[in-house]
Amino acid sequence: MTFVELAADFVSRNAEILKMTLADFSDADMLARPAPGANHAAWQIGHLVGSTWHMYNQVAPGALPAALAAYHEKFTGKTANVDDPAHYGSKAQLLEAFAQAHAAVVEWARHLKPEDFAKPTTERLANFAPTVGHLVLMTGSHASMHVGQLQVIRRFLGKPLLF
Image 1 (cartoon, one colour):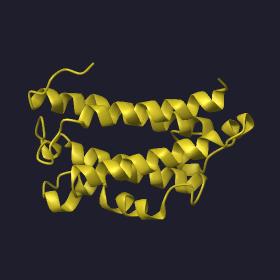
Image 2: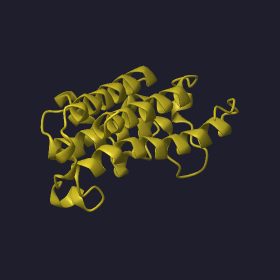
Image 3: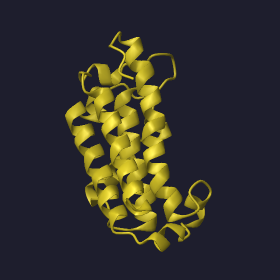
Image 4: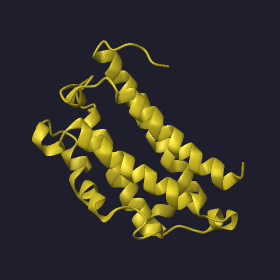
């Protein structure tokens, strides 16, 4: 396995772990907050879609579906406190958008050459992902970080331990 294949697989596997974590959530469960000020699953999934679209649009415009741009505008820190289900859409809609975003990243990453991983990112993005390689790996890590938060919601809801 090449590093390029490994990096793409890392993003893909982390996306699958996130989907497994939410498999038994209902639409109502997606809005549960385990503590005051904690983000619920609906906002977190929308945030992952929007932030992924935003970051990759800076490095590879058009690599992710243009329709996902709406998630970047809709899932901001200013909307994290919204509890209205109509704002978020259904669990199925959120997970479909998440699947589209991460599948597009995986497909794009699989076509990179090893030297592409050393290419610098744009100024603002460079603060936390200075190269394309950092960005690809950060995509999987970002999903994993949210899986940890989703596991807390699982426990709050009394769902079975998965991992």
